Length: 404
Image 1 (tube, rainbow, N blue to C red):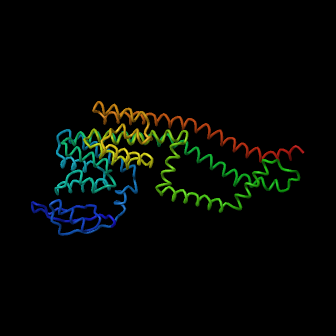
Image 2: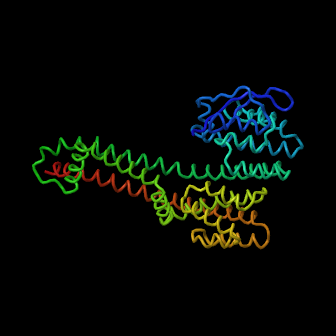
Image 3: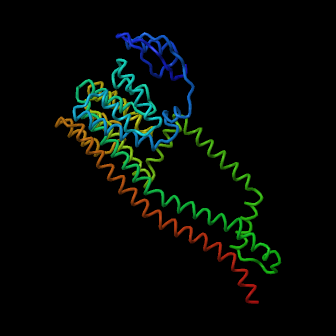
């Protein structure tokens, strides 16, 4: 059954009329959820997914959503640590937020809180904004009575992740622009400049140099069969996407990516940063190790590490130490295994995993800087040779004509 958004009006235990929204797999589940909260609904209706609701499910404005989440978490931590009650803190934050989808989400969370729901359950009604890891940490802080401290740690984690993503984006934007410009220059040379010279070469009585003949044949092929190239490229992309969506294909491609000389090291560093920071933060906020492992399985985009975390979780449930379980998978680096073992012996596993995350974040930055520094001169040199080959090949016959 498809999951939908239901708006409701109900009467609470105090006889007051409340209204709000919730996510449920059908109207019957929505009614059961409301009754479980001690509410007596008299109006429950499903809403259509509108433009702003699409944003709430992560389809649009991902960057703005991340910024709003960081602001929300940071302000909530500050207010709770200052002694402000949760309901009042949510009201203050909703006033501070700019009008938009996220502001409505915070108001809906506050309404759900007033109707008797737990804060973590209210957040869970908006999965497009609050991840399972986020909700799990909030629930642990809520049950343990240290929600303010939990939000403070969450805010630091989100800010660190945002800074790392910004570093990745800023590091890759220039090489990407350089690559696009280089490809565009070659395409213009082959499709616009080269045909101009073909008119000159059509009356050329001597044998053309091999490089010029090669370019002329390439130009004719591109002119006559461009549709074939686009079709083949489209088929290859579709096949790759379909293959990627299969469990076997995704794992094979993820394994291949990890084995690449430079990209593999960077991929491992990124994955370890996400996984270690996630598990470490959850452990520091009172989430059980099994729950942290189960949640972290969905954080990494790499099937190899997802499967390894599932296997590690099974081993931990059987009574093994996490360090032993991670080592048994054979995919986690020795540094992560060693720091996890130290954390187990000292009782500070969360702290040690955070240190592992910091280590691999720095390693990821250094690897990316090396890739960029290597890529830029190689790309410039390669494109210079290609363009130089095209120019010289076009001018050789012309220089031959001018000599005669």
